[in-house]
Length: 174
Image (cartoon, rainbow, N blue to C red; front, side):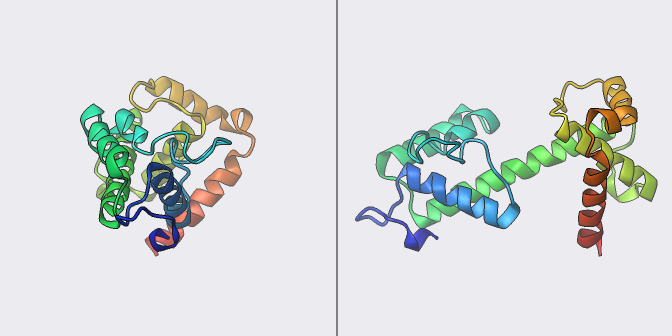
């Protein structure tokens, strides 16, 4: 994708190009729509892709990428580093959410020792918190456990979500 995009005479992409490229890569590779990378009805050059770092990696990381982008844009290598850093942040957040899910359920965060039933319960709870937009760092176990019993009412497509997640897990595990 990088080679097909308009670049500067120094072979660098401007912020709008980096934002578009990362959006395309994450959607194609992972199916992710990363907040701050999608245009959401705006023009592609209306915000910097580095804004994602302010919330997830702190002001220092945000500043580094923002300066690089603002000065001359990013080279292919810098864009790849940017993408890898974003992927790493998403991975860390996913693990944090998974460990929070274990905590909410009163289980140890040892993924390799769960029974099949525990694994399904963790996955259901993880998806419940995701679908309902619950703050995984602050949610009370009672809130989650109460919602688990009411998910058919709260979220009518809950059984389809469970079926889909189990199919994905089966494909990944096999």
